[in-house]
Image (cartoon, rainbow, N blue to C red; front, side):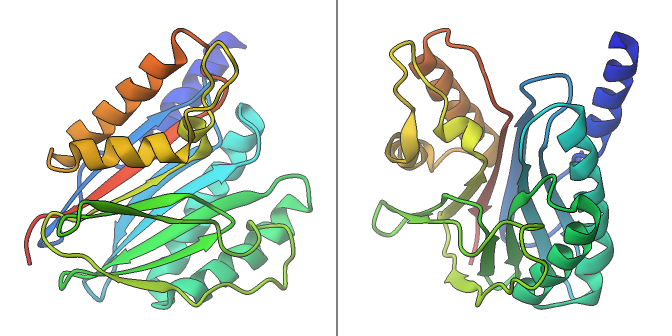
Length: 243
């Protein structure tokens, strides 16, 4: 069993991106650490025929081998559907129908989708997934976006959108993450929380994307003070490097 789980872990790890997408003016990095050998979180990015890049952040309920299987199915559907549907909200609707038919109420998936355009426009839409954070370099402020609509695979007829259109300027940073970071507790059972995360993003916003994620991860671990990681941890950082 341990050997089979290790094989599953390696396969799941191989589904994560191994290089940043080639889109002018953006720098991307991702972080993923399951709570067990396999997990239900995933992130992905995919270059589309029209030149945009689709960035996905998703969290299947639970963790372990069951959610890992649903995660792989969700990723496959998203990758197959994204090139066929240029509208982010419509794409989530398609994914919802497909996953509802497969999951049959046993699992649901929170998912955030960001469509990046080289001109700096980002379309952000969520299926019950949040918070996401947008740091504005011009003001030093961090905006938080919650989880709009129901998670995927709850109601087949659910519709999503409209998407948020964000104009990212040089130095702006968008961070999408799962609740494993937000809800990690210290020994007194206090959660790290969204406000601390926003403060860490602002503090390290000038650093490269991978370093920013590493700094957030270390801040959460320091806060936890040895408390175990009870949930999968996943995050993506999207930095606007030029206008």
